[in-house]
Length: 421
Ligand code: MEV
Image (cartoon, rainbow, N blue to C red; front, side):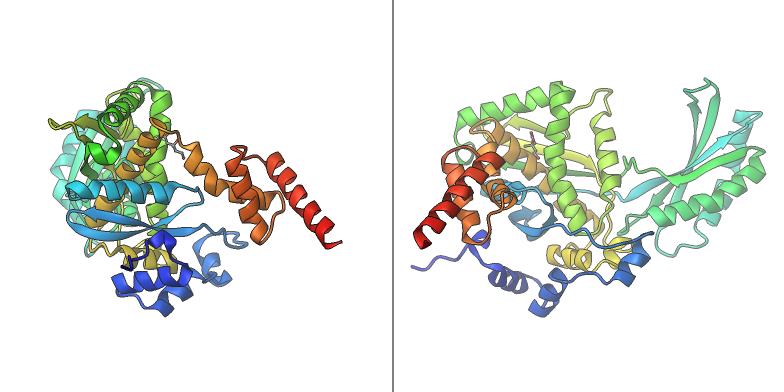
């Protein structure tokens, strides 16, 4: 009986055809965009002092089922093993139905820093009294994204120990990331506050620490699928190490961000904003900890959970001007920003589970180095079929280094010259 080819067994053409069969993209659309080099005039509009393009490999993680919907997940990343690891963990999660995720709120804050206050309490009162007017001004230019609340907070200035006031707009970004709209709102409201509260307004900008925009995803992994009860215990032990030690937690979270950044880049998100918020959130109890947690179910299966701020959008921003990011969103097929956040969080969890399972059993170098060996073979000067032969030989000899690649290559080339002479 002929079994269906796995995505990783397909050639390039077959992979594109597979995506066409699962999305409403045409093959022409996909192949022109995937192979497209952005014209200089486009990149010159995106950034200043443009000189060219920096490319990254774009791949697809398979097996993802999030809230009972199947996804093909685009990932842009240069690191080997990441996509295979995410796909594998996603497959393991399928036994209990995949990932259950939620990202209900799309509220972000815009911050207005208020200084030079003679009477901080009185200024706070004036701002509160005029809240409705300030919200009306904030909302005067934007049709969809709306500021819902304006709150004030008195802060201690940790530099001079004086008091500082911050007015915060709570903005419902809906399906957009919201940065531009929030920044514009803050810049509209700032001068009004300055006028009415007899103060000096300095900063007017969104906060990327999107604590109101949290995505949570959870999955249960059957103990037998993971390799047995001992492996579950090893994974729990690895988790407790990372939860207790910031030096390990940073690496643990780096593994999570391998997945989160890769999907974010492929779908045109601001991955720097996501990174910054993630690490601040990891420190929310005063100590830098893991963004995932793991526990054992009463039957001994492993329960994994991720909780992470994710300010993502499917409208506006780079996702509407970059053709590959647009296509990434289409391949993923998320109909809302919160659906996208649910998938991204699930990829982060899958990535982490795969990493700590490998680390707590056979280690990561074996799988990682297999693909990396090919890069080393190329770096040593191998071309064509020699890439495969040099990398396979290094892998078999468990010695994947540039020196070893050079020696093997020289041997092969020498033999070839010898035979043909
Ligand atoms: C490598 O890019 C990521 C890992 O180091 C993550 C981890 O240690 O958990 C494998």
